[in-house]
Length: 66
Image 1 (cartoon, helix red, strand yellow):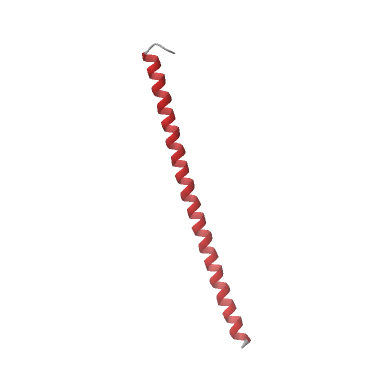
Image 2 (cartoon, rainbow, N blue to C red):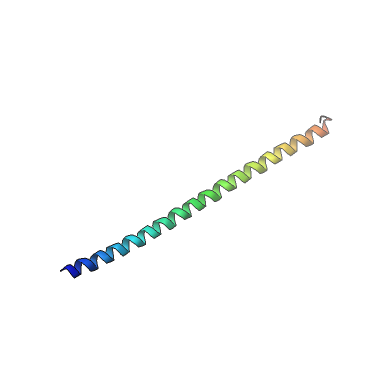
């Protein structure tokens, strides 16, 4: 009877370990996706700001304002 409990506990422990590994993998993927999203948003904001700054510089030069 003790052998059955030992085998069952080993199987359950193996299942728990596999589930933990899957959970860690999912969390890492989610964090990577969020990081990529925020990097893209930040890059877009920087490009937008550079475009706005560039436009203001060119308008100032056209109007004779430095």
